[in-house]
Amino acid sequence: MTVNSTLLQKLPADLAQDRLPRHVAVIMDGNGRWAKQRGLPRIMGHRRGVDALKDILRCCKDWGIQALTAYAFSTENWGRPIEEVDFLMTLFERVLRQELREMMEEDVQIRFVGNLSALPKSLQGEIERSMEQTRENRSIQFTVATNYGGRQEILQACRTIAQKVQDGLLSPEAIDEALFEHHLYTAGISDLDLMIRTSGEMRISNFLLWQVAYAELYVTDTLWPDFDRAELHRALTSYQQRDRRFGKVK
Ligand code: FPP
Image 1: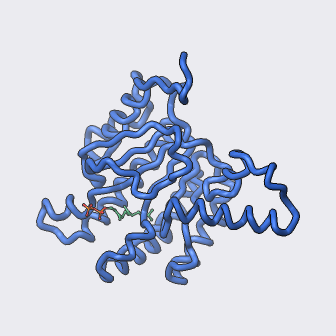
Image 2: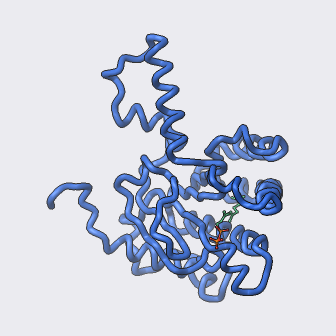
């Protein structure tokens, strides 16, 4: 945490509490570039990325944001060098083991979403344990998208709904937005209000495709390991200046 960040324990006075996003999502891009710029191996960028994520999670909680969803590993990320994939899987597992106690103390509810069955068994075990133990925590809902793809999420919802129709449990007329959302991984979390992407790319990269429909987008050139409370403050200031019309005229 930088000196600048430690000064930001409380919600900055220029932000309106009642107009904060309820649900923020982050595409944590730029770990590799951050490391390269310093002549370090890419994995060092991921390590620092974890520190940044921990601080942003705590900050969201301190400032009263109800939900944070982070894109940790996409279905496309399997295409990275095997050493990097292995490192990331081990990193997720180690972080979960190390942080569980603190998540309990801080009242964080963690959940993992994505095709979790393809992850290493030992990681699946840690995921189950952390989700089970933090189930009743209420201060913030922290969702980690791992082996996640937005199109795959929509397809799995379609399959489940189609099966219910085939089994006679549901009529096609009953399929509306609310029912569909109930079958997405994010069921039970408030609508996505703000999606942040670091390191400058103007892409959604298959993240929360359904949920992003009316979210505000914020892209910064800052690389993820450098995304701190001051950066989040900037993103929230931008968010609060937006005129959210949801397609209507005011
Ligand atoms: C993208 O940067 C980042 C990732 C693919 C990994 C992000 C994962 C973490 C920060 C760890 C989260 C851990 C837990 C347990 C939630 P990149 O490597 O694509 O960067 P580049 O575009 O500069 O190469």
